[in-house]
Length: 172
Image (cartoon, rainbow, N blue to C red; front, side, top):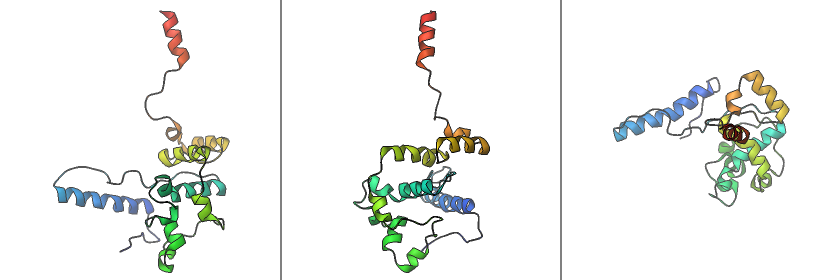
């Protein structure tokens, strides 16, 4: 059975239903209590500057099984969109939305190619925290315009700078 939202439905509401329903069933089955979805943090949304950055994000998602060493080639992961795109039936491929930007002819090679650390360092904060994906000037403007300052801050307590520690030591 394939489950997907109706075209006129709210995607966020549908994703909440999709992730919370198994949680309720799990807790009912095991006679336990708890809150929140079982699949924390899988649905992401963040501003993307342009087509090149969108392709970077798409590549990041479709190459995840390869990076996790679950498969030798990304399209071998049967539960991913790349498998449907490359190997799925006509009906399975029809379930994928047409990307807003044309994929390169060698998309499979691009996804299966080695990703540079710089590319991964650029996409990971966006994927993890919802910060914008683009060049620094654009990201700074979008953070300000959309009030996304919390997405750019480091997690946890701010680190004390080495200078302030030295100043306190010298003052005593």
